[in-house]
Length: 135
Image (cartoon, rainbow, N blue to C red; front, side):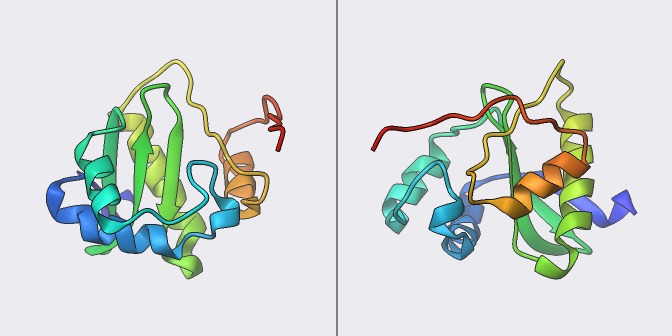
């Protein structure tokens, strides 16, 4: 089954795909930004190499999402295949961990992103803390 998943490092050629993927995400489920960046802002962000490793997820030879490991060993997952989200995310996570061994992995998740929270809890993560912001 893992042979169906491939992680390829993000390149400049992936900027449009990543931008389109970002557009599909619910702003309420984001913690990194509340408004959609312009394409130029997004291009600049991607090209700045903001993460230790950032991959495009390919499943059955189709580009379906991205997964990254931040400089603080935080994992971010974005999959645009709702029907097989759990399977693709699980296989991607397994491969990311295999390619990037660490003592521990973290994930910062919006309280509104129930789908990712449930996925992480089913795949070996535990809740460490709740963080609050004064508005």
